[in-house]
Length: 223
Image (tube, rainbow, N blue to C red; front, side, top):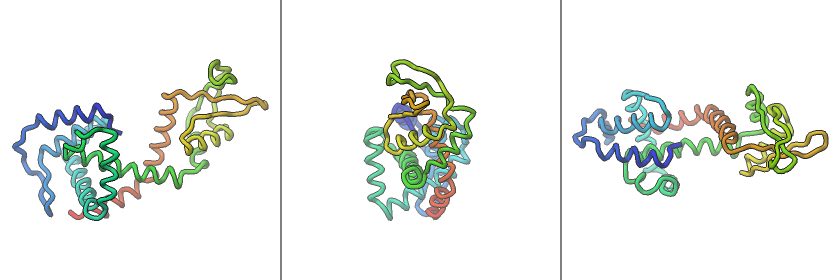
């Protein structure tokens, strides 16, 4: 997801651009200029670390602008909800730049598919399979609430831990526990390790929702 300092960095780039824009695409009241494409290309590279080029940027922008246009015409309440989230997360500057606003809106719309899958579809069998695909899941365990580490063990195939992790994930809690030889242990997962596991799950969910999201996008592409 776009970090807040990136929003201000890209906003500065946009302000400093030459305002004499060349039109690259114009159809059905949709106009895209070279400034729009340059802005999106730079924003995409800074956000995802990939230079997708101007041709792909233009294709993305046509899709994004049509999706936002369709939702603005047919589901303004949803757009308003997304804008409130963007305002709270990134500040008012993010809504004052039309290109940045549309990029963030589109990212939030994509997130809705991930959230729906996580809340309503993701099950423990998928999590087991995902963990099993790892080379290892070595995590510290402690019988003193993580003040002292007793051992570091591989938990990628530990069904009790996977079930406990799944429950914590769904309930947005972090009370990771297992029992070994009838003794209770805390599983000590620091923020960095949790983020690594979380990103693995997010990537999996994105792959599972890719077709549905692509269909959604192209259904709303009129141009």
